[in-house]
Image 1 (cartoon, rainbow, N blue to C red):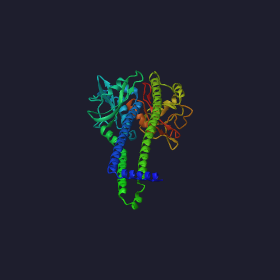
Image 2 (cartoon, rainbow, N blue to C red; image 1 turned 30 degrees about the horizontal axis):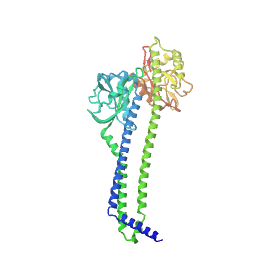
Image 3 (spheres, helix red, strand yellow; image 1 turned 180 degrees about the horizontal axis):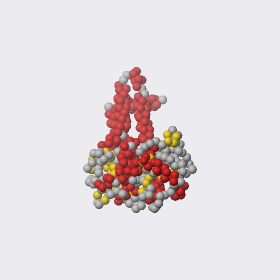
Image 4 (tube, one colour; image 1 turned 90 degrees about the vertical axis):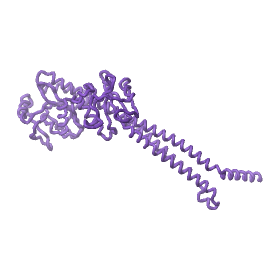
Length: 451
């Protein structure tokens, strides 16, 4: 019994001497501070490196998305010299990049193209308006490009460079090659920039959570250590007020660390989901582009069919040729030939079509379900039409495509640019149950003029 009492007294004395040691709390604070600083420094590096990787991946993904949208056939026509400014292909690509850069959800507005030739790099179409102070005319030499840009053309690699400084400022940039499917050579690179200051701001923003965690941990450790020290000085009768301070400190630190790990898991999962979504979206975009390439090839075939004919293509000839195109797959539902008919030639055009065998031919618009002919300067009636079994709507011979604002805009674009032009996807009154896209191409034939 006496031995147990002696052991208990020894333990109390040891605990008392250890608890009241003059260096205990300073050492505790020093060790805690060092551990917290090391931990927070690791967190800062982890968050900053992850954000930097995410920014670079976003740049590369967006540049890849843009490169998928561009037509290599149009790029081949460019010389990357000042003379490109008037080329329909340059104008089309420039307008396309401007539209992309203005799309806020895209996230980046500094889009441009560049080509390596004659030992240097030269700018092509850009996502800037012509009067934008940051724009460069076609053929402008890129004087101080990042060294990594050469790898795009030599090794066909996607590169993310920077931060670097050129004659336009300091940037972090992604460059993606556009490869000619015919020659497998890099015919151009798409570049997307993010300003170096904006890049630094995003890295700084990602430090906020770790720094807040750091200050909270330091506050808890310092205030908890003070309360432990203060409790030793308090009379025994008052110590019960902060009797469980150790538990409170442990619970507080545990809650903060739980929040930190949950936040980190949320960011990691969000990045993974975003990456998966981009991969799926890119696959869908690639399939859509492939379908548009097929449509473009078939439009070119129809154009060649008209231009190679020495006579006026008849309705039966048109139907025989285009029926094979429609039944080939489900990409195209209808093919038609649209004439441009001034009001002064309207009656003559109607009589001519009736003479060719379309007995009840007339030019009309559809207003509230009724077929009427509204006087206008130019009509764009459908002279020939071939549709599959699913194309059920009001689209028929004689319908004025110019009465649809979306179609009228696309016709004017095709007329001025000399290139195929499509409407935006829209619900047409001719096909109210479907989202339609109409594509127009100017027919280059001496015998027939139209789309």
